[in-house]
Figure (cartoon, rainbow, N blue to C red):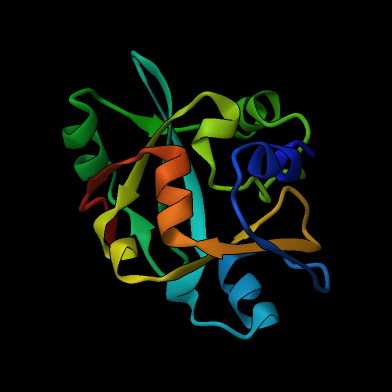
Length: 150
């Protein structure tokens, strides 16, 4: 997985944790003993201009209409086979929400701005990364917009 060298190359401090095998962002929150609102989960959408990584808190869902408005194009969720191609070094469903690592435009839900720290999967179902939200935001340079729904 290229995440750790990528963070190190960009001078980003982080903590790496190992946990039991989990398959959901809310499960990651439970395993890491943090609120689901601190867990950043990626949702990949595809439009005419390509793929975009939308990042939102674990308890929220992506509002596709809002994402389409922000991106100014029709979008749909990426398929499982597209995800496998986009993230070949990651376990399916454990992609880190670091669009810059994958040369992907990133849109962040505005509610994440309230968090000092973010927890995220590190490419496997058994590893997590904790880092400052400011560092993550500086690294990914996301568009910030209200893209999440309860």
